[in-house]
Image 1: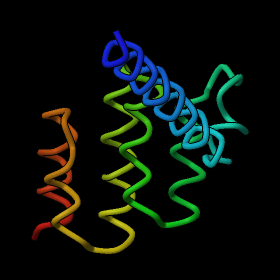
Image 2: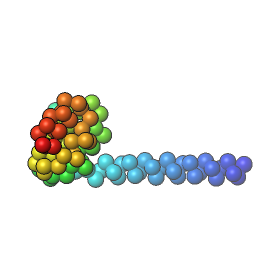
Image 3: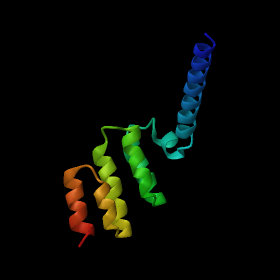
Length: 107
C-alpha cells in the first residue's frame, strides 16, 4: 500500500512539474505573445524572427501553428538569403520553397 501511495505521489509530482515547465516555456516567447491573437499570427512571428535574425526561432512557427509550413519555409528562406547560409535551406519542409532556397542561396 505504501509503495502505491509513493508511486502515485511521484506521478502527481512529475505531472505538476512537467505542466509547469511547459507553461513556463510558452511564457518565455514574447514574440508568440505579441502575435498569437492576430489573424496574421504566423506571418507576424516570421517577420519578428527575421528582424531578430534568429533562424532557430523559425521552428516555433510549426510548434504554435502546425499547418503553417509555408510560413515556416519562408522564415528559413528569408534568413538564408539574408545571411547567405545554404545550410538553412535544409531545414525547410515545403518542397517548392526548399528548391527555391537552394537555387537562390546555394549558388
